[in-house]
Image 1 (cartoon, rainbow, N blue to C red):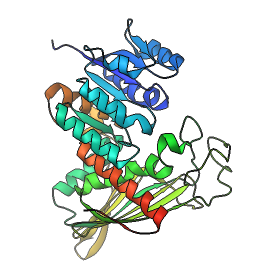
Image 2: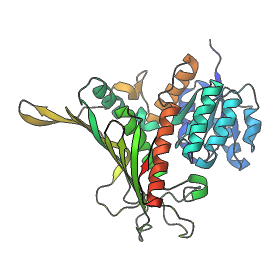
Image 3: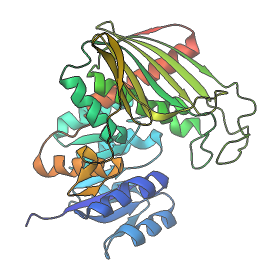
Image 4: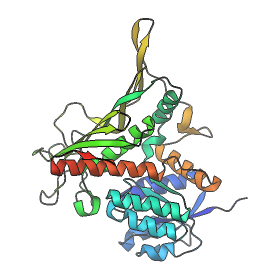
Length: 360
């Protein structure tokens, strides 16, 4: 029997305890042997619930990655620390799963890619929407050629009200931005992945903080207005080098009657179109008529494994462990996630300067 991989968790907040740790526990393929958080009590709580009996607790991540017996590190910290912890972990001979977005800045994301190349260790980013059954189905349809040349897309993450008011979500220094970098990043990643297009040419972006009544109806309650300095809505117009166009909409608060969940996308091709929005719709024409097809994804497909239905988070963890154990590429390549970060930064830059941003 192959030895069980040993995992260390850096950052024991909500994303670790609601996604990474439950998914690893459900798979029961690894030993979670180390937990780190700057608040020791958080690490101790996670270790007690998810760790091995002898799991170690740290407040300094450098002590955790110094353990040569740890094979994999999951980085679940605020965005500002993603790059430094990931790079240090790679050079400490660890494979790294880093939570999305890849980094606070595009320069940090590029440094992470370079570190993975130099060390030869595996690096992936936690874009779990790629692992949904809907994404797998639409990817297969596209690869079969059903959509033809995809020349227009919309990436949606529109909350009518949904400003996260816990942790550091409202801290620009720690996170780098609001809904664009928080949830828009998911929809953009999924759209680029399905299009298999990672060559942006030009970006125009706008950001807004206009929703004066954003606290009304917010499912998580209110916040100190002085602490919330980020945008509540961001929009990007992206032109790719092959001429394709992508519109990106990301909001925490927008006075619309048509919210759209994060990880939604619409793809328009020369032969047909596809939409992921609370399910999958394929649209096209047949026998002189316009048609829409809605596949039943409630059984079978990539969301199932050994007869047990998986959440996208569990599928993500399973595929990640498969990549490490079998020495194959993870589904989310760091080079791809880096392009997402570069586009997000370009939207913010364009919004601040009022000018388009061009890529080399």
